[in-house]
Length: 499
Ligand SMILES: Cc1cc2nc3c(=O)[nH]c(=O)nc-3n(C[C@H](O)[C@H](O)[C@H](O)COP(=O)(O)OP(=O)(O)OC[C@H]3O[C@@H](n4cnc5c(N)ncnc54)[C@H](O)[C@@H]3O)c2cc1C
Ligand SMILES: *[C@@H]1O[C@H](CO)[C@@H](O)[C@H](O)[C@H]1NC(C)=O
Ligand SMILES: *[C@@H]1O[C@H](CO)[C@@H](O)[C@H](O)[C@H]1NC(C)=O
Ligand SMILES: *[C@@H]1O[C@H](CO)[C@@H](O)[C@H](O)[C@H]1NC(C)=O
Ligand SMILES: *[C@@H]1O[C@H](CO)[C@@H](O)[C@H](O)[C@H]1NC(C)=O
Image (cartoon, rainbow, N blue to C red; front, side, top):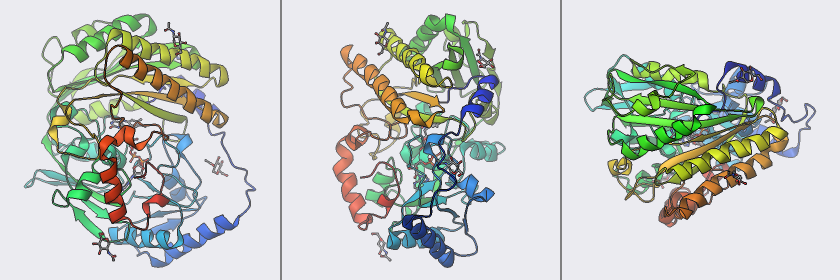
């Protein structure tokens, strides 16, 4: 869920060991590179003054290709920062006619290599950075170049909020296009259930607005990520936001059992949709230690008694839980994270129906077992196993969408995250995280949870996850929509899950 670093010392440690995946400086200019360079020049020639193309080693280029997970970074030939939707359309036309690979980056938090990066042309949406509150319509227009930090900061003085990310640094675009689990999802559904309109640049370059009346694109964009074009504006429903209660608990290994039980009891008993909790187990190979963290949120100045008592009774190394503003709570999670571009990271989701003591103990054992194993190969390795208890009604807040394919029952989008430094271990980490996820999946089935066909959350799914495991019976319709709106397969030149 969130990253593995839970102490400043660890952050310093990984920053020494990181970034070892270089191509040599003397990489020759191949004919492919030259072709990509001529595409960059062709883009420069067609875009307006509102947009710019950048090359290494400029600071703009470096910012445009930056990704949170180093495993997701690639040295594109150039980057382009479009400033208008029309320029996005012109860029897509050049990319289509030259068949040049490209990446579309919002917040750059995809942990899957190549999903928003490329060796060709990196499109960075950073210039789409508006936050406009429309009080009359009860909506907020939000640019896809923003992170949720910027959105919540901008909204802090307005008294309204939107259904968005839980963790600092994550982008508006990918989170909203892939699903969007929020601190207020138990109250209002996924981020994608709260979109009122998309401004979309179609693969053929036409700028359009998609609302519920465009039934096919409306269905596809809600969960279908970058298959249907490039979104240049999201109009999201707004909700009143007053003071909240929340913060971070960090708990030592000796309380693992009590922590597990408190998390399981919360998941089983809580019915207050204003409450949210992310409990996680974090194994750090550098210290051979396990730490538990609980991110706690209640959408009110204090929670009713009972909800968090068991968790709060466990002695904590750190406890920042307090009443305050939503944005202060959100930003307080930041120090737990590794900054962008420091560590390699993969995610892999394990959707389940319920957390039982046996299942959580399997998840914990997988976290420490594989964490210790990876630690023998890379001392900077870390694994987080996160639980995400939500209300049973989370999928009742919206209509049919690409994801989730089945809204009849809630799935809890549990997740493993692995951090490491040595790029030679990428395929080992892939196999480990896949194995750990599969073990938890099978353990849930063995205890009688019928999750054989439970949909993987596209934003947590490892890059080789088959489409039907995320989109289920929606795949044929999504393929038909895709071939209608993108007959030239322009979006196939960008990485990601493809219909
Ligand atoms: C530390 C961390 C915390 C997270 N916390 C949460 C959480 O609380 N809730 C949750 O639901 N998920 C969470 N996630 C998962 C997150 O939602 C996904 O990683 C998401 O895709 C990131 O969006 P981004 O814009 O930052 O990523 P990017 O890597 O920029 O983009 C992700 C995908 O979206 C596509 N895309 C980006 N912009 C556009 C656009 N404008 N038009 C079309 N396609 C576009 C990209 O091409 C790529 O395929 C978290 C991930 C991390 C690493
Ligand atoms: C983990 O180890 C690092 C250095 O290896 C140290 O600075 C840090 O304090 C340790 N953290 C914990 C939680 O023990
Ligand atoms: C990108 O290029 C720089 C400079 O040559 C190099 O240090 C870095 O490792 C490269 N990154 C990738 C992902 O290839
Ligand atoms: C822990 O997980 C490993 C790997 O899946 C497994 O081999 C081992 O038996 C597990 N240990 C326990 C106590 O379940
Ligand atoms: C682009 O695609 C849309 C949707 O298929 C279509 O309506 C429009 O006419 C196309 N525009 C051009 C210029 O081909």
